[in-house]
Length: 330
Ligand SMILES: NC(=O)c1ccc[n+]([C@@H]2O[C@H](COP(=O)([O-])OP(=O)(O)OC[C@H]3O[C@@H](n4cnc5c(N)ncnc54)[C@H](OP(=O)(O)O)[C@@H]3O)[C@@H](O)[C@H]2O)c1
Image: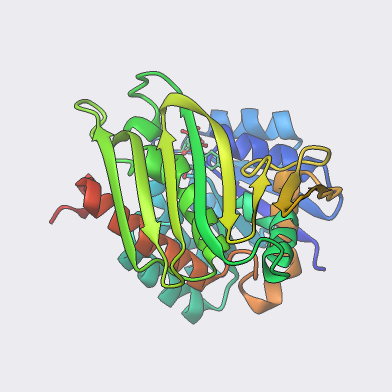
């Protein structure tokens, strides 16, 4: 596996976690950070022991020693900066949701292909081996045919309109921030793209994004999925699969960690808890997944086709709840 020198684009909440993740492994290096302001870049670099700090994203992508860029910008900036990174020959790990909508992603993928760089949506949860284990249990037929999938990812951040999650121009909202995990999980379990989707959501008068929403998906197999997401209401995380002969509960679906990732599998009169260990910090594992599959340009845990299916599903769900982002208006 190649040792990558990472450039971190932006210094927000998740960039901080990613930089911390990189500090837990010797197999990758956080070499540089770029911010809108040099002071913030320097402060972030000092905190995480990063050698180079830049006062602009342009300078970061111009650094010839940076192999891969982690894009942790607000959602509405993902496409533009993915394209700019690709054109600068940098490999890309871009935060979720990978773009604002599917047509944007199609444009990004065109450039990524042309520039022949690695590209992955930073759905860190997908890189954890509990999903491979879940797939094995499903494929073994232990719970029979998958019939119902249910999930939730929701939290209460209060009416903080300064936060990108509460801003329509930043393509925020509960669906884009956390509901996207539920949609991703439902599609993963079904193993196919949905044929019918619908969501209802409360669009805040000030935020102009969904503050709580619930959605449903139907798959060609006959499986149906429901999910809830919110930024204004806490709900215990949930990811359950019900089959014709049993059920599976994923106990820690979104932030799986060693000692805290297991599948409870119940079939007939048997119930088993499968612990899934890993040995790596969640975000370090994501960065190392990039390095592992660099030559293939995409990783099986989160392929380009998967991201496209995901964005198409999010587009349909948003359309059904009447949520349009400012950047999509003609
Ligand atoms: N995978 C995960 O676990 C996870 C978790 C949380 C968030 N995310 C995703 O990561 C991305 C960033 O989320 P975050 O929570 O880190 O957000 P955040 O704390 O608000 O950070 C975003 C950063 O982007 C830069 N930025 C550039 N233009 C901006 C603008 N107009 N408004 C605000 N910030 C701007 C800023 O960095 P500088 O000032 O340094 O330029 C800012 O610190 C989102 O796409 C989100 O969906 C993923």
